[in-house]
Image (cartoon, rainbow, N blue to C red; front, side, top):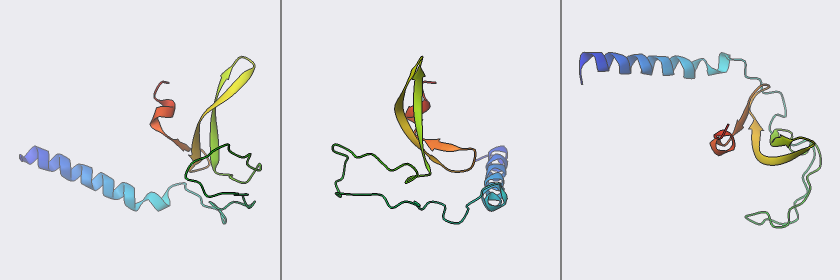
Length: 99
């Protein structure tokens, strides 16, 4: 490995170190109770996959975001995501790769 490549790798490592160590200083907020449901969900079975499904009580999964596609007067649910901050939703790449 040449001197330039070594310098570039050192710079990347330094940037990652700064990013990872200052992560707590960024605008991340985790209010008390974050990640816990205020309403106990009703689970009738412990199947590995949803069969038939069941409506969730509004507010029972407050960190879930539904991604909908609008078409004139209607909207269709096509993917889900998780709220990871007050301004960001984390979702799977295949949900947004077309756009």
